[in-house]
Amino acid sequence: MDNERKKRGVLPRTQSGAGPSDAALVVAARAGEEWAQEALYRRYARMVNGLAWRLMPGDAEVEDLVQDTFIQALDSLHRLSEPAAFGSWLGAIVVRTAHKRLRRKRLMTRLGLSRSEPIDFESVVSAWAPPDVALELRTIYQLVDALPIEARIALLLRRVEGLPLGEIAERMGLSLATVKRRLEIAEAALKERLSQGGTS
Amino acid sequence: MIRLDECKRESRARFIEPPSGEVDLARQWWAIETRRRGRRVLHRRWAVGGGLVAATVAMVLMVAVPPTNTSVTDGQRPADIPESEMRSTLIESGGASFAMYLVDGSRIELEPRTRLETEDSVGRDVVFSLHRGRAMFDVAVDVDRHFVVLAGTVRVSVSGTRFSVAYEPARGESRAQAAVHVERGVVQVDTRSSSGEPEVHRVGAGQSWVGIADIDPSDAVAVEVEDPHVDSQVPSMHDDTSRPRPSRQTASELFEEARTARHEGRDADAARKYELLLRRFPRDGHVGLSAFELARIRMDVFDDARSAIEPLERAIAARVFREDAMARLVRAYHESGQAARCRAAREHYLESYPNGLHRDALATCGE
Image (tube, rainbow over all chains, first blue to last red; front, top):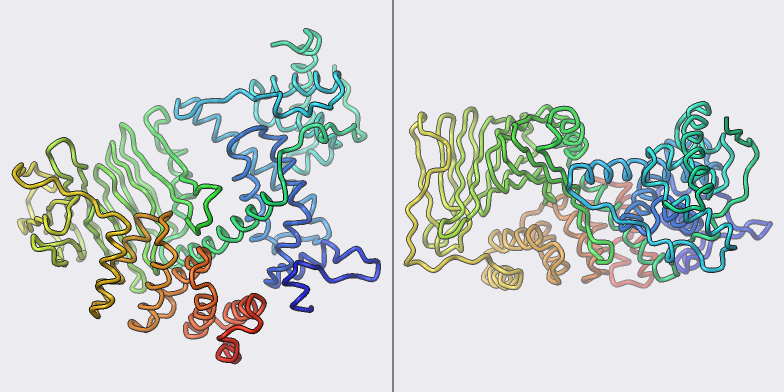
């Protein structure tokens, strides 16, 4: 590959003009090509930052969560059996890393070693969200701190990310049946909140 | 019963987006790269010296420690400062003692109310800092690795030994004190004499060393005790209140002393000062140049290219003498027999400096 183009961060062009596929980048990254590693980061940075933010909105640890995700992914590329599935594999890493962080935070809060900060909805939910969507989202985020962590994550992946159950199960590393059980808990609590007008 | 659809529902994600911009993403990538480089160095050390302490600690604490009496903090490097600071782990016992094992079989036992922290290692050492209390270390034999425990300004380095270190921080008029007792093997205790000269004490089985551990070099006091039956708890020392209270050296002072030592040809002293600066002040502005100078001493004076790799990476991350540091890194990999890493480092250098000063000299490195 042309060194000048690599230096400028320009990816090699395929015949379709779309740039290398994820599989090609993963293969190159595994071989130690730093340009490919950075390319993977740039391609998925917004996805990971967005998902991390929505799982832990406004949390000071979001930046660390994102960095941990990419570090783990890039250091564990050899474990990815299907290079073409890098995107969903990365999404699973975000979810599971967020799970660990949330568990630790909850433990630290219970031990009195840290405080749980309430979510500032005005800074989290977009101002141009339709009123009914804004109400639903505020209600979801008001509720999540009171939920078990797996139920919290399952609810956010379902209601905010809009993922199908199978993908939620894959990302969380749980069986479909377990995800359904977690969601039932969360959806029941959400339904009750919404029926009260979304107030706590 | 709530019915759950199987089809994908509409995503609300677009209404909740973080405030990221191009500048933030560039900085984020830089931070990721820097941490990955640091992890690669750390993983090499742990593979030789003892495994992942943080994972071991987390596992042991979840099993062995009463949660109401224990605090664990994962130290994290700041997100907005361009350094290669590594993650550290703070281990604190509460009302009960507990033990943990490293992957190499080394065992560490903390007495109640003891606080121990893993440190950013320099070279191939495995380093802990004892902030207070007492810990027993049963260290597996490994002739290529130094297992180091810091207690204030006292440094204990061992291999294949069972020993304990106690440290009492300064309180009011009392100075910080440290005590080392050896049950098996021999440990080396580095400290300073009353005249400020470095002193090395070899403490054998059944022996103890006790001394002051929060001192300016001119105030060093060390008392060596050889009675095998001596109580290894830290005794209360008579405090000379007429002496000025010693203050810890600043990064600038360490840096100037290191430079003076270098100019006077005292390279070992200079290296120690740079190491101390890097360990105590990992965020200071002198870090880049200190790391670069330390690497030069190790490569050019001590002929130890392998131990120069980590400080070179820190110098590169700090963007100090970047071209020279990158070229030296290529050489360091070459001289330490790491051909693949040498080729990768050379590629990186040539991408960054295609017409660089060292281009020709690096042409055959890694071949």
